[in-house]
Image (cartoon, rainbow, N blue to C red; front, side, top):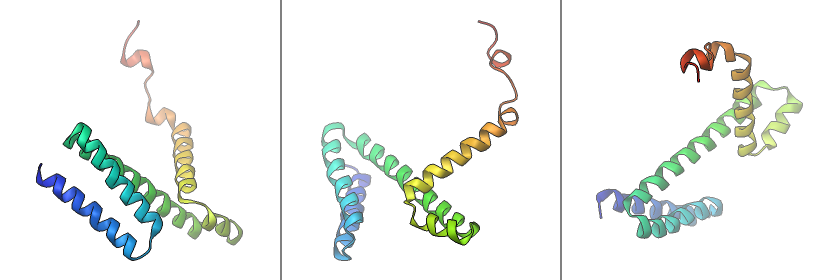
Length: 125
């Protein structure tokens, strides 16, 4: 086993232990589930599975952080009544709202984002 695998499990176990000590059940549940899943996937597929789980965890953490930051930003911008509604929204709902807004902006400015048609790039069939 490589140093990456030992460090990987050391961080997961340390994080799980700290979450259990500070009684953060939701964080503990996620970290310990990732630890157990990594053990099973690692036994089956080897070190590649650890890298895959790490990348997936980083992407999910980034999405959660982006959703939380967007919710905090919207709370600052919105009037009081909408602010209360936004504060009570879940982080996943905030992230979904952000994705919808980005999609709408891309749809409005589609000609600027992709100025050429398919046939101009690929050619005739």
